[in-house]
Image (cartoon, rainbow, N blue to C red; front, top):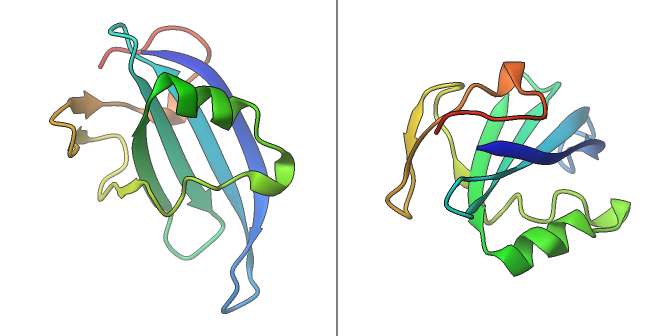
Length: 108
């Protein structure tokens, strides 16, 4: 997989008014599929989610205005472990270590 784009943005929890950081990374697989990895940090528990995107959705994500950042959060699947193997509803198995990601290739 190749990292195409990433971004960070501030998030405020509506219940506690605590501030955290939202992070999103868009990857493209060798087969042309798109994976959006979302995480939030600055909370007692780090939350991580993924969502597979169609090409049109990936383009929409790339062109989002800052006030729309995080728009895919609710449609994404929860990831129970960081850097582990994940089997998602599309039937694809994925192993990814986000902590060391830089532009370039990652092995799915």
